[in-house]
Image 1 (tube, helix red, strand yellow):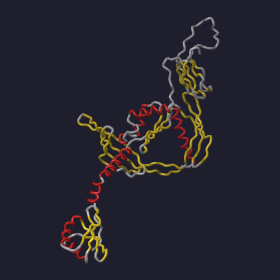
Image 2 (cartoon, rainbow, N blue to C red; image 1 turned 135 degrees about the vertical axis):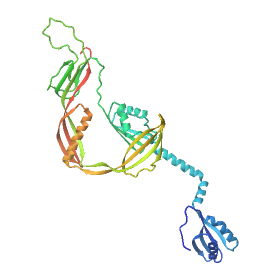
Image 3 (cartoon, rainbow, N blue to C red; image 1 turned 90 degrees about the vertical axis):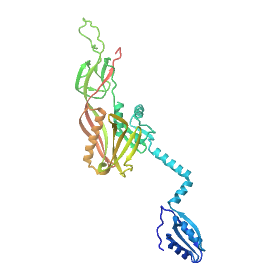
Length: 405
């Protein structure tokens, strides 16, 4: 008889036949259409073979009418496997509970890490994140997209200039840049206007107050530019007319000055560029409250690098909006390409980076006039630049007038 592969799903048993010429018993089994395979000769009076579980009854009937002794050596197959599981149901329940436990833990947000801002702004960011459902312990499925989180933070926290949100595993990384906010005095409060930076005055537009400097004057931080005190401090030749001193006012003016900044920039000669390959996968969910149930596209795409775009659409019945919505998550495959710059290209990129960085810090009203390279050298595959940028900006800051000044 030929050796054949044992079926893995259906049940089968291994038997041992003992007696004189056990091959004759196996031949009788074959004549009764009992399927036999894996026949082995143990010795002259013993053979071993494998049969299906369903043929046990026919085997026993043949054994009763013969002098052979039949014993069962082994049993295998899916039915026997299920029988063993039923006997170990507590172990099975434990495995199932463990699987669910790890599934839940791997789909919860464990921590939120905020970098780049002082502690007081970090506390405000944490409060705002909590208000729109981003906090440790929330389901990852229920989190808004990084773009939505960035937009909401910029709208709700005025101290922020920029935020970057990145979800890595079960940790949400949030990087933020603080905006420089000028505190304004209450309207009408007597005040002077002082310089916030060192520079040379290029233009002045005084609507209220007394100018204390002129165009082309060199000023330093704290220098009074426009005074809210209208009374002259110099001797008045017209001493016959005694006028009542005027009350200080709230000075209003715009003083534009030429300021200077020294910025250090490091630009790598080799860098990675990310491009979309065109391969996409979509996953679809039904969202009910904070719970999202996937109904199409269960498998995660095997993309090494990818970017995601999430869209949510409420579901309506006639004119009523139902308490659940349709969510589609489009995952696009990206690839990282190694690129290399020349030294001249790296210098140009560094200048642009420095301008963008400085413009973000100063705001859109500042005008960058010119740039000059003070120093450049290549170190560890990077072009290190020290740049000197000339800027035209409003350097006014309000300062209250203290009675008696």
